[in-house]
Image (cartoon, rainbow over all chains, first blue to last red; front, side):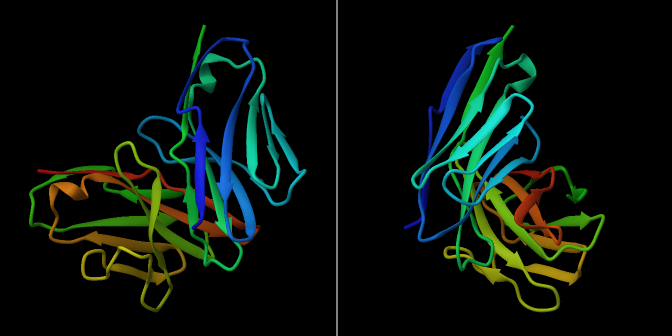
Length: 111
Length: 115
C-alpha cells in the first residue's frame, strides 16, 4: 500500500535556526514526490516536484532532496514568514493522478 | 501554474441537505481533481473530474454521495449530498496544467461545517 509519513508532526525554531523536515514514503513505482506549503485557511501552495533519487531543488531558503525511501526539506536560516504546515505527497507510476499525502509538519519560527 | 477559485469559500449547513461547490480555473487544464481534508488528517482524493464523462471515484467514495460534473475544460462542481456532521471538512479542487506534467495546483478550498 502506498504510504507517506512525515516527521516531526510539529517543529519550533528560532529565527535563523536551520533544520530539516522528513518525508518517508512507500510507493509502487514513484512518478513524483511533491512538497507543498499550507497556511491556515488556505489551499496547499506548490513548492517542488522531485522525480528521481539524487535530485535536488532549491527556492529561497528551502531545499528539497530525494532518496529512494525519503525526502528532506531543508530550511536554512528560517524567518517567521516561513511558519506554515509543510505537506509531502507522492504519486505512483500508472495512477491517474492520485496524490498520496502525509499529515504534514507544522513549522513555527519565532523571532 | 493556474489561478483557481472556489465558491463558496465556507458554509454552515444542516444535516440532510446538499451543497454544491464550484471550481473555476483561469486557463484550460488537462486534469481536475477533488480532495477532502478532514480535521487533523491528510488530504484524500475523492475523485478525478473527467470532461464530458462520469468522474472516476476513489475507494470509499461513491457517486450518489459526491456527484461531480465537468462540463468544460475550466469548470467543475462537487456536490456533497445528504450531509451529516461527518462531512464537515475542507473540500479542495486541484488541477494539472499542460506545462507542468503531474504537478497539481490547488484552489483555496471550501470550509464546510454540518450541524
